[in-house]
Length: 532
Image 1 (cartoon, one colour):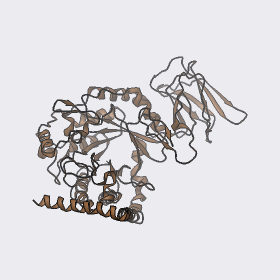
Image 2 (cartoon, one colour; image 1 turned 90 degrees about the vertical axis):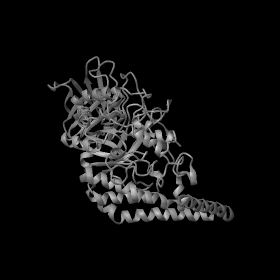
Image 3 (cartoon, helix red, strand yellow; image 1 turned 180 degrees about the vertical axis):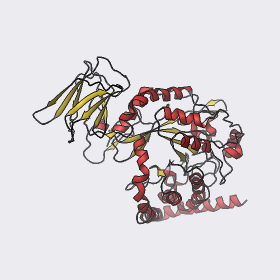
Image 4 (cartoon, rainbow, N blue to C red; image 1 turned 60 degrees about the vertical axis):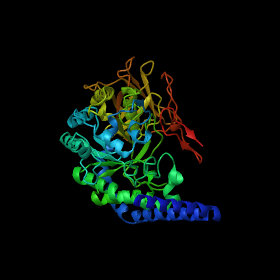
């Protein structure tokens, strides 16, 4: 009865608001929007003039391990992993971890699914070792995804793996221990804004009539600005579940990193409030860029690019990309679109060459095992990383111009040439070098046998080099040639397109962008464009 009275009040307020907009020509709507801007601006000002600026004094210290890691494991695992993209005999496409939303499953029915979740084959140490053997340096797993189900023993809510499943074990505790044992940095993905089981949280519009869902109720995407009378409800969820569980994760497991998503489901002021709670609890934990950001400032420790990238648009500063082995983050028995090992090896080199990290996702099965296709990808990457890690781990932007044979990275006086496309005559042509080269060799050659090189200097001052390689590629995915530089200097920026490379791909992302109003595509497959 009390619930009906609350909803009746909200409905009346909404109707009054609509009538007022019609009578005043939108003046009240304008006033509401202005108040929303003031709300967010106040939160920004308080952060910038106080606690956030203070927290950034230790930013360089806490981000250092992440910068040198370059490669990490992302894991989406939860109750949704059991059906694996199927519901009541029907194939459910897209992101398998979104099953509850896609099929409009109510809380009680989802609990029935949780009561069947018993991943008896889960082995934390095995997961961590497989990540480590693939060359990954940090491990992030979903402690709570959008379904609101905690994959650890939570005292805040009984909607968790201990209270609702026959498993009765805390996999987050086991993974934290395994990571510590094997020298792997550890952290959590936590869905702070979306929570489909909670009656006050954004997202569930099929059971609770809440904003932030697919029906675009109560004003759609910016519901909290158009209908601020609904905001206290979401704030209650943040206060009573989101912040307490985040603090719980920090205090129980001491993670090195926290990863957030979908910040647009809450107003910026709430996201900033959550970040402040994190910084008060642990000033040293790394926080990704998807928790709190505005057009003018990103409050996280680094930036995130789009999901499922195949190429990277230009990003400055610290950034991270999150590809997944197929097209779903959670396990989907129907998704067989797994990329090749070569795809990820080249993607890792591309991200390092642009100064970014690669956080590669897998979706384990509901029984706790990894998909055999994911295991094969991890093993393949590991075989390459085992011999070539030096060229990506701790290495970064080389400064060399674009070359059509691949990309380049640099660490100290070493340039690493990542050759994706092999020259037809075995002669690797390099342009724009910052100094003379003392020595060239293959990174996989333990003896460091020098390769024959021919250096040149044009009349315009361009420094070039030709390295004599074998007729066929040593590694068809990515052969790394090391150039040891003889000094320091400034590399040239003129792109070099060698005629002996069989395939040349020139992306809009690699062009120099001038003018206003231009925007990059998100880098997903076939979305390497510039618009505007």
